Length: 226
Image (tube, rainbow, N blue to C red; front, side, top):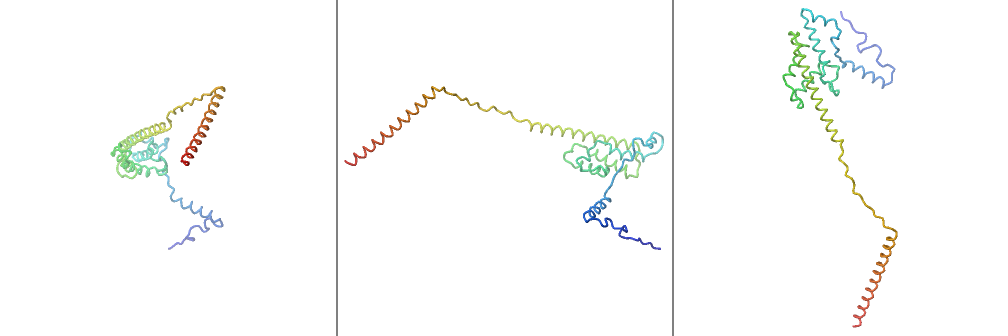
């Protein structure tokens, strides 16, 4: 017996019916984003009653798996810094961060075995079918803390270097004092004498030029008569 949907194209009332074209397009865009929205919530709250089961005898490996996944969220590893790895997909972005960290030239000092321990621990806690109990969780947590301390130390060192470089740039060189120009003002009597000497010198120069021109004319006249 077959059943057919009354409306194969979706709701029997079109989305955004009688709405302006711009509003209708905006509604379609936002609805298309819904399928891409993903979020990984915290699995165990601090006051979760299931944590009390870890103090009793029994096999509660699933709790250690949940604690291992939540440990990424509470760690101080800046894998979501600068918006490159959003906080919504913790596990996926954490693994991508570890892979990039292993191939990064700026973090060559980090042991490859440490990153492999974290990658294997995450895979076993989330997808593995083997045993993941307290020993496996503690090993994973120790590796997580070690990586957090190393990245924190490197971030602090890099910040100090940037601050030192910025301080060197802001320190301006000492401005040398400009040469002092000394102006000497002459008394009025000396000013008048200086002006008088200038006029006498100018008069002497004019008389000399007149005499020189007279001599030249006389010489030229004598030569023409001879």
